[in-house]
Length: 256
Length: 256
DNA sequence: GAAATAGTGTCTTTAAGACAGTATGTG
DNA sequence: CACATACTGTCTTAAAGACACTATTTC
Image (tube, rainbow over all chains, first blue to last red; front, side, top):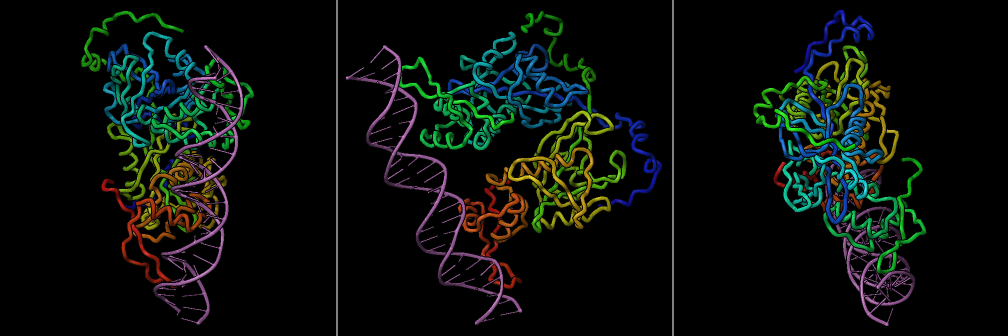
């Protein structure tokens, strides 16, 4: 359905500064924009994520991802950083945009668009974050699908009881797992889940936890060493009752 | 910074329906949310995208991606579909969310969050879409980086003149190219860029256009045939001055 | 039959998996 | 010295690249 050519109006001969001064931002629908964060760690064979027990309606008493409403003058990433700092007391962690969720009825209060980020931390930082406030807790992610199929996931507490998730947050965590699995193959994302130094077997266990399947030790070893992303520290494990393994660290390619 | 346990207030004993009835949506900042679409096709060795010449401030006369503001009761994907239909007269095309852009100053009018989708079509549908309205035109994408590095791209017209892009749309198109390159390896996304039937060499040329590099013919052929995503039609090309190639179609795995 | 691309067969190269065997810590 | 895991070397298998050769159409 082709439109007629626009007619020349007063607006066309007006300059851009004049136009902007006249602009009325209320002429289109305005909505609430939230930024939520899926904070993920991998340890003890499980992926874990940080949840906040809701003290308010809606979904009172259920668990939700840490999040907050976007403020007028902050970027999306700044909002995600602010959420991590205020809800999990974390700073300087790997953070990347995941997806934007916008079903009209996903929040029963009002229309809320949620831009979701995911963040990756090692076990120590995750545990420190999860033991802060009373409402904050750690949930273990149970994935019922394989590979990069995708779909919602279940989250359980330390006694394996299902934690009901508020809003569409089960879908969101599921998408974070899917993304993480997909990235692991070609991006050095696994290192974000490790502490400062680690052995090759520890790195392999984390990869296996993320992927939800076992990996071949020989080829994992070869692949990692050939990738050039690992740097031997020259130091070795201690306190293990077998031959100690060499400790490696992530070789940063100069930039962060 | 641990918080004190919440005190029991009137809100806690109130039921969820009562809470929702009392809820005041204006207590957080509300913003404009736009949905933009990067419509991509691959032909004549170039990736092309659909642009709209802006007839209004800001960026009057420059070119922008087709887009529109999200309406109160439509999903993000519905908005993208609406944009494609109204600006490009297209329906039923492959559509997927790309990324959400939210720099505070990306739109000089007011704070606008843009949820961007990308859509893939074959040459015929693209050309039909690009010759509709006068303001609509096709731009050829010039990528100056390799692989999945990413970054903004340049877009030129049919006479190879640079088309200046409005807002942060050069970054957005760049991200669409990056995503497309990444997906090509493991998702049957290349078929979206083909017509109903096609030869293996035509498919290879499209892959090469997307990736920006040449591919090995033998191994491309083997890989495609082994993937199980191709279905021989039994028919062959006609009107070519050499041995005609077999025509294939995309084998749908039952569902769309 | 010349030109041009389609399609086949096979050799080489490279990466992954399998597995045997040696190395080196702790108890 | 027993045990457990680290690490090394080599064989097999599968996929990708290279390349020679045959097939089939139009002009």
